[in-house]
Length: 213
Image (cartoon, rainbow, N blue to C red; front, top):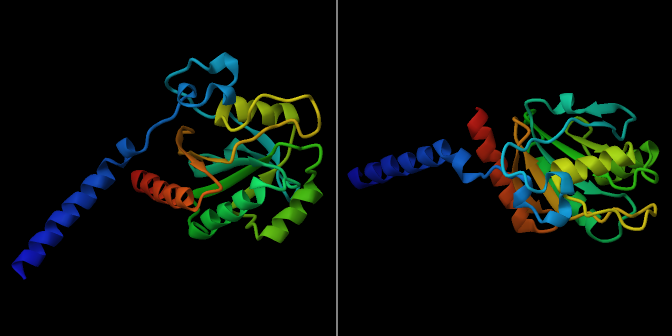
């Protein structure tokens, strides 16, 4: 009995220590931490103090969504397009897992940006959201100005390669999910097509929640 109590005592010490050090366990990412192909050349040499920029988008319900709606929230971002036949359906299914995990936690939100806003009008996004089971209060699937989305992709979240030939689908996006904390700092990068990466993302979100709780 005594040995069991001692074990529990030390286990609690370890767990508490992990929670206190959770800020150290999650790095803060800056432009220099990403593949330079994903970063706008104007900021490629920045090594510290990067924060994501303000955004102004339109969601699946035709409602304007801005960075104010994500203020003091932990959120996950990805870039996609509704007609994508390859990685996007997998990414969406995996984002749904994150949605379901934190469905009752108002501190967690999700944000998807279409890289083909000319195609992904509000009615297209709405149909997509309904078919996939998106919860409107948790997850905004957005369209907007192509220039604005491109700048966010290249200067804030680093998830899209340079533009291609200028065609409608000239955004080459990564499968990355980007984790952003309440200070607008990037705290994690995850392959949105891999189950083990989604588990890592969920665990990291819980670490950030422990920091702000």
